[in-house]
Structure formats: C-alpha cells, structure tokens
Image (cartoon, rainbow, N blue to C red; front, top):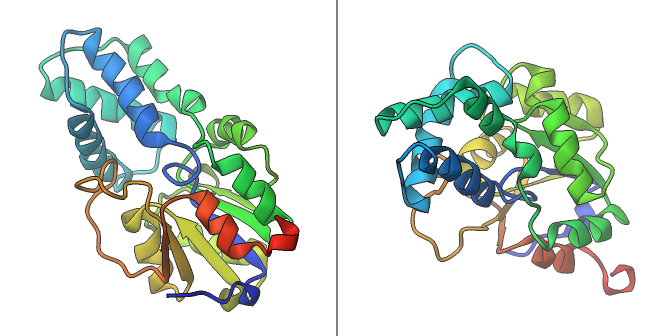
Length: 236
C-alpha cells in the first residue's frame, strides 16, 4: 500500500528494535551474563526468553526499565540453573546504553527531520534513552519515556501522552515501529497510521517481542527505505 506522506506533519518512533539494534544488544549482554556463569543459549533462545519474561514483568507494578532488565536476567539465569551476582545483573540492566544504533538510523532521521516533526515513544528510562539518542544524533520533540508515564507499551497511555504533547490531529501523525506487540497493536487501536520497519524480514519468529497480529499501513525493511519514500528527492 502506498502512503501519501504529505498527509503527515509528525512522525513518532519506537526506539529499541526500530532505531537501536536491541536484539544485537540483548544477545551480547544477556549472552555474556549467562556465559560467564557456565550457561549458553543460542541467539534465538536468548531473544525468546527475554520476550517472555519482559512482557510478564512489565505487566506488573511499574519499575524502571533497568530494573525490568535485572529481573529478566535473574529469571533467565534461574531457568538455566545458574546464579548471577547483584553487580552482574545491575550491569546487564544498564547495558542499554551500549546497544548499537542500526547503521541506517542516523542518516534516515536526519533526512526525515528536514520535513517532519519527530517524536519518540520508548519503553525505557530517561537516562538510558538519552545515551541511545546520542548515537542517533537527532532532536526528538517530544520524548515520551516509560519512566515519565509510569507504564509500558502496549499500554495506550504512553500514546495518549504523546498526543497531548504533540497537540496535532491523529491523522497528521505517522507512527513508525518494529514491534507489532508493543506498538502497532495499540497504535491501530487508537486510529493511527503506522509503518512497520520489519528489521526481522526473512527471520523466523518474533525475536525479542511476544507474538502479535496487526495490520500496518506500510511495511519497509529498514529506515533508509522509509526515508527514500517519505523525503522528496530535492530534500534528500
């Protein structure tokens, strides 16, 4: 389906999985935590375990994302019959700051920022997102973090706070995300037009997110493709 990008004034983004390579970051950080304690899982097993435990923990009482990761790490270690120290778990909780940006994210965001107001809705803490944003090199306005809202997507409240801060009609907002579960399901429920950045194209399963079913309005394999479609040649 083709989109009329002239309809939109703002683009809102998920960060982790869309702009920052959270699967690579999780595999590296959680794999290291397990390996140093004598356990080893494949990349797909690590991602599936993370998805299962993260969703369960985020459905409970709100806690900072770094603390969510601590509990994910603890649960995965317990499943593997190993014990991780508080220090090792805390390091895993803060590993978000080291997760890499996708190679195309920064240049694509630069191009899009010349035409659209860019916002971000992220399931993260303020300080951890700030570290990731330095890798992206773009100014998001507004920034809505889970820490600010006190809930995690797929909760619709995170989107509603973005609506309040953008102060734009919903038909002028295009939401861009990788996770069907965290983003596209609630965004479509709220009447948003969405673009699925399918970073897992060609891979089996849902990776680091629980399974979900949604119908995005457009699917692209990466941010570079989105920038090519949304930005006129004279602005590229």
